[in-house]
Length: 315
Ligand code: NAP
Image (tube, rainbow, N blue to C red; front, side, top):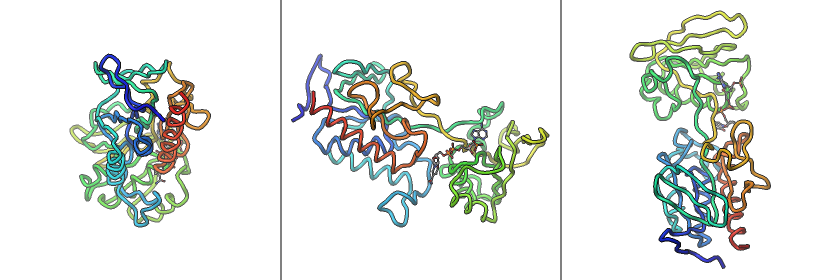
């Protein structure tokens, strides 16, 4: 039987602190709170993670007609709260993970727990163009679901060749007059079904073997500058919006020099969700450069919760 709450210097010691609130974090919370473990989620300022940027989720089991990403996140949060999870929309600023009691800070405020589940996810990459930041929100976006409506009747460009780029293009095609996908190679890496939907869509065209080297526009995007990766020729291409969909970076800065990371900054977990520090687990996109699906993240969150519970039973 796990002891619930200890008081030390007036700081409550939780059984589990979950950092980050996407499918992995929420699922972990559902499991730990339901197992009667004192659980708090420190969720950051955009709880819900990448699914907030997704439109319809068609491949999450149990929703045969699909469900909107934000709605799925709301449901998961409500389910976690139902079992007594405490929830704060605060950013963790510092961690100290060694020792039996792990310490986590939100600014000056300290939280303590016997186990930590890291589920901070990953966020969108940008092209790092000269005028990209200046025109951010003025025609540049990484979220078609959030901003697609503003491009009704307009011509937009999508950068990328993975599933995200396909999804962005298909979402945008519901609003835009035309969508042009610019990809740096001559084939997509996206799944075949998404590629087919894009290639079959009458409003979507593809420019192969090209990179975007800058965005053009004074107060709003008026075009992009394209460079042919074969001939090195450059030309201006008129459009009224740019959606960047070129992959993600894991949110692991907090754990630099504390946990082992891959070359791309994903937390190394072995075996299962265990990090190199006993009692510290990582789940979801933060430790998964390969699958990055809501369902795999949820599965990992479940594993992390069960592994945290097992760890607590053995101390
Ligand atoms: P991704 O699979 O890593 O694809 C990134 C794309 O952006 C690649 O085509 C890459 O080109 C291109 N790219 C990267 N850096 C670039 C740069 N600096 N300039 C120009 N192009 C650049 O990332 P993702 O599309 O975000 O997908 C991530 C994971 O989530 C994948 O496993 C994907 O299957 C999954 N996902 C699934 C769904 C779904 O099932 N509904 C939806 C979204 C994402 P190269 O191909 O040349 O490397």
